[in-house]
Length: 384
Image 1 (cartoon, rainbow, N blue to C red):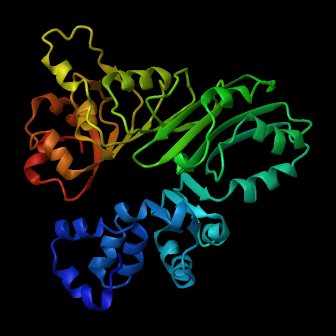
Image 2 (cartoon, rainbow, N blue to C red):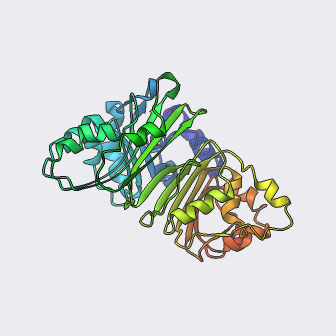
Image 3 (cartoon, rainbow, N blue to C red):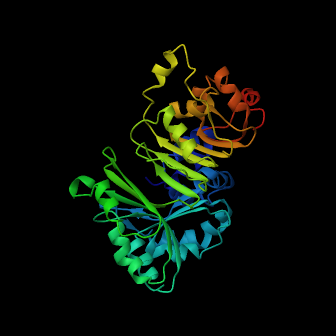
């Protein structure tokens, strides 16, 4: 979808903010920035909203989930004009390998904390590591698309470890992402685990997820104890364990997350600060839980270090999970939530619901997608 600003800028400029945001949210962030940047003062301010600048995907996806760089004219404008103007607002970049260097050199990114680079494992990482023969310690945190099969112990031994005779410590978290898993044979968890039989240092854990609706699969392999700060795409198949250094997690599944799942997350990641949830499936056990008169065995979960919660792609049940005070106890006056306005309005019963009032009163700030918080609701969020 593209906007022809020559014919539509006047019409867009006449729309109220709420309607304008609903329309623009249907576009990708790159289209919004490229189309609205410099049109007029108001639309320029809209394009600079954090909704459109926090996370940018500066590439094109084509057939079979392959990627291409942006067209030269669009890439030129981003590198010469748009990125330097919004550089301090960018927190995450999704790039492909051929245009990566130019984009990263276009400006400074002082608040960037996430970088996804597509087509990078075979083309950049493996050849680069194979030249580091004197390396004694290697920490590798990688999420990558694979063409044929998952990265496993055989792959790491053959293409990385065998080139490093002095390597003593190898810490890693690798998530292999494969689309169209029905079309080829993919190995089992048991096979993946067996490929690490000759690894000398520490324990290696693995698990595999197959997502039938989206037609893709993920394979997680990581050394344990786990010393990295991030753990992404956690599902119901997560095997557990203690991850005391992890501060940021993302949760995703095509199956529902029940209350017990969030209890497992709290126990495995006792010091998490940042959580994002992507799950459109309602909880199965919610009605059963609410129908019970005796909830003595129901544990209230505490996330004492939580500071940032993203719920844009979460079902209402998970918003309730975090806002109803008999489910989860939030820390006082320190949590920022990213959420759709309509969902927040529904879950809080138009900002009148008593069971969500306590946790909402603890929130420090909100980023609402859809519209601003109305004046009558501000007493419901006294510290926001």
